[in-house]
Image (cartoon, rainbow, N blue to C red; front, side):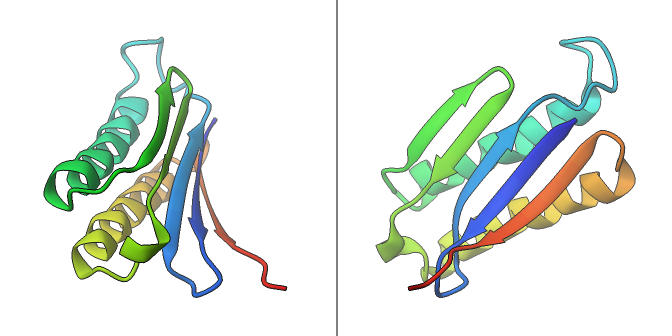
Length: 111
């Protein structure tokens, strides 16, 4: 199962994305569900780095992806568009393939 978590900060702005696991819909390297999710997440990273010119925190390896961006950039409309589109896209995949992809949404606790 591929689990993708979208973390929001105390102001409910998207703050980071983490993905762990594999969709396990086909053998490694042939899994189109995993490939689709990976492409979406990598496109979000590229958009934040190249279009928005952000220094992001990223950790990307087989079975794991983590992306976080600075708090000062979270209110930027371009940043919001990129990460919200990634969230919508992953949610659509999770809805279509619920036995392979799970989406989670976490809100940071205050106080």
